[in-house]
Length: 136
Picture 1: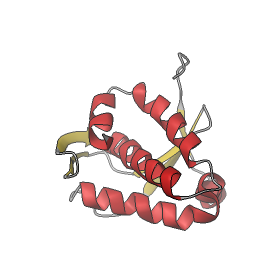
Picture 2: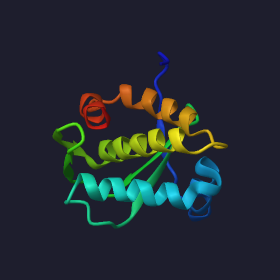
Picture 3: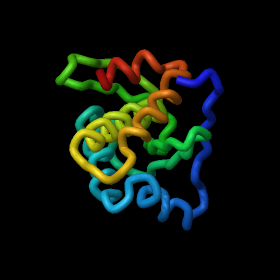
Picture 4: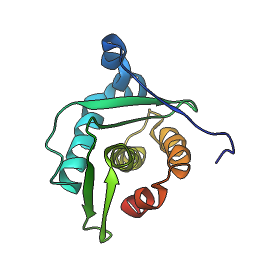
């Protein structure tokens, strides 16, 4: 972990949005996107699809989150987690979970490195205990 504050910037340009997941997930970008959406669907009944915002981190990491202002009740039966978190933190949590899964199952992409970059960002957030409780 770094002592430097890590910032996040939303990707708003349509062309950059189209290139976002291929840039970070390579040839597995469709599988990665589907995995993130499926994890969120499994974790919260409140998320009913819709538009997602993509974020690039100042440390080279990334994440995606539902573009909603509500809090989500997140549950994960695998570790008995239940808690409410912002849409942004829920997105960080499911992106971390997907990155962890992909880093263990796929070779050739930098999923483990992206996991660590996003983890460093998550550690600096007010809802970090909820995020790490969810992915634990």
